Image (cartoon, rainbow, N blue to C red; front, side, top):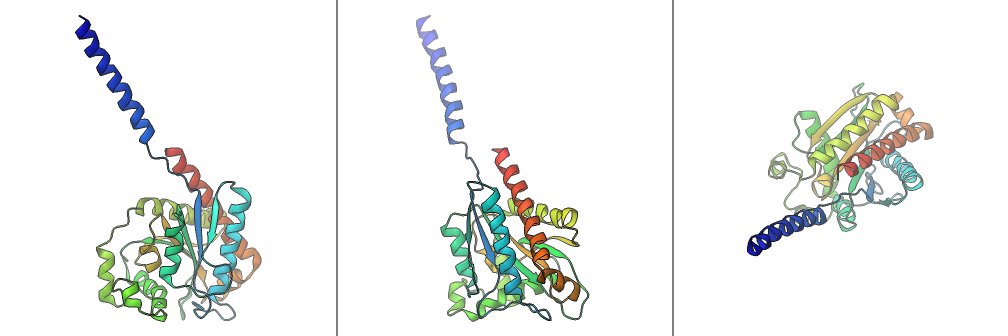
Length: 261
């Protein structure tokens, strides 16, 4: 009987230890560090409207977004890839996020399609482009790597040729699900709260997203080639509306993913 009791006791202790250890090692995901990347800058102006440069619009929205988070979400560290008009290579932007162990990477851009009446927002996650327009946009944004010295070595053989995009077909982001969740919240905010035309969540092979090791999105905030939308993005109120939409999506995303743990 004593032996039997010892055996039962040992089993109960083992179960208790297993339960407690599983509790102890359960990962707890927090969104405490966010990197905000204003696209282009310096010698790289990005796309152009009649009176507007993409690099300027992206920077102003990025700074407004960061201000909202810093002011209203205590405990979250905001890191900017740039806070002024300077050039940064795509791998340098991703390196800033990776080295800071960021929990989220938000890349801000503005779109252009000359000769078209296209308008609206788009939010991209890393993935294979599913139509030619996504591919052309990714090629345009990725073309900046050609400004960098030794770009083939720096980007693991990627040279922005159609053939080199096979690299992306071999890479499936471990963070795609989280990225898609955040992207959908951004587009919902643009459409339902900011009153913008949402062109939806899309996938394409952006180098800056490819190089990051956390949930990441690239936001096209509107078309500078559309005169009405360019005017909207030029104004402080328009930039504020876009920034506040991304901020609200960030708060929703943070609350949701942290509540799961």
